[in-house]
Length: 348
Figure 1 (cartoon, one colour):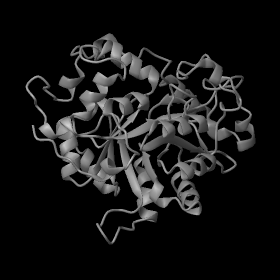
Figure 2 (tube, rainbow, N blue to C red):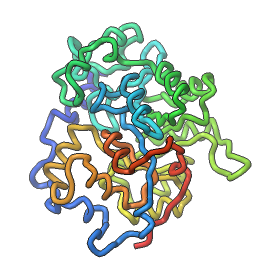
Figure 3 (tube, helix red, strand yellow):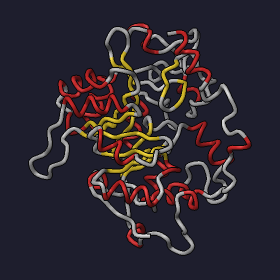
Figure 4 (cartoon, rainbow, N blue to C red):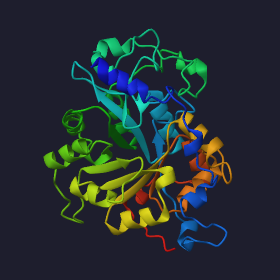
């Protein structure tokens, strides 16, 4: 266990330079990276009307502490179609909503997020212990008002059951990222016990977790033949055979990092019958990306950045600033989730 913790720390966000000089992208253009030639209109005219679904990444983390009930409630109030959250299974068996330090695909360290703890993983604790943890207001991933980070009324690690019961009242779709090992089955059981199958989707960087969901629940709709239990394969840097990988585990969707969802990849995803979603990194990483890599044509999750990504035709955008995306899309009506089901192929 201690070897695992040390490995995660060594690869953690704050343990080494984020962008070594030799690896920095000197292109400075996100549009060019995504193969969008905006000046020459290298995208379908229908993207002018394309309205992706808005997914609040860890809720609305610029307004409330990330992955808290308050953050998810704020995202729902903004008008998000869906919320995205991360889950781990504690040693007592309780499922909690938490991201933690580490990499995107290997997180869970709790001692930087919370105060007064030794280097440790959240899975080493019980639900009672976790509920007593207090957030570290100095941790840079907390980008909301610092007074909220220390407000024990909202700043605590919730159970997945608490968050799901809140979501059941609002009707917002819940995209559950299976972070911890062996989370698929207990999360599935909880969702079914709350009668929320149609409202919950599952995603993971771990192919084993996605494979487990599909093995346990292979049912398809008799109407359209699509899987009833929605799953998404998460990719950081997608390999050349990412479509085949998603097919091999029975995924419903493919989720790509925002600066890898090129027009070509999005088209390939839709042609293969998958849904598509792009995910934006945590606020610290996004600040680095926007200041070092893509400052040529957009800011840090501003309207320009969101508009560039939208033009790839991606169906859903999992963002840290859902209020900005919502305002950009000028959504006046209630969320309809239509973009979650429609497959658009962009002609280039």
